[in-house]
Length: 131
Image (cartoon, rainbow, N blue to C red; front, side, top):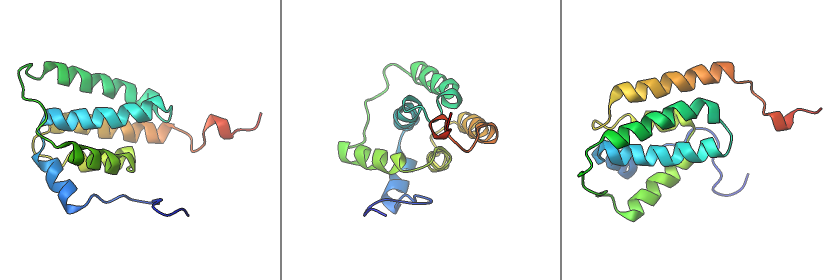
C-alpha cells in the first residue's frame, strides 16, 4: 500500500467536523455538489447521482440571490474537499448531514437514492468483464 493511501472508512478530524457544523446550507450544498459532480463525471455512479445533482442545483437556485458569499477560508475549503474526496458517497452524506443548517429531507432523499442504487448495481464494472 502506498503512503497516504486509505482503505476503509475515512474519519473527519475535529476541526473538519466543527467546520461542517458551522457552514451555511448554501456552502454545504456547494461542497457536496462539487464532490458528487466529480464522481458522476468519472462515470462511477452517474445514473444514481444525476437526479440528486439536479435537486442540489434547484435548491441553490432557490436560495436567496442576495445571500453572502462563502465565509469559509480557501484553506478550510480545500481541507474539506480533500477529506470528502476520500469518502464514499454514503460516508460523505453522513458527514454532511450532521450540520444543523441543512434540510434533513434533502439528505434523506440522497441516502435513500444511494442505498437503492447500491442494491441494484452489480459489484463489478463493465471494464472488468471479458468479452
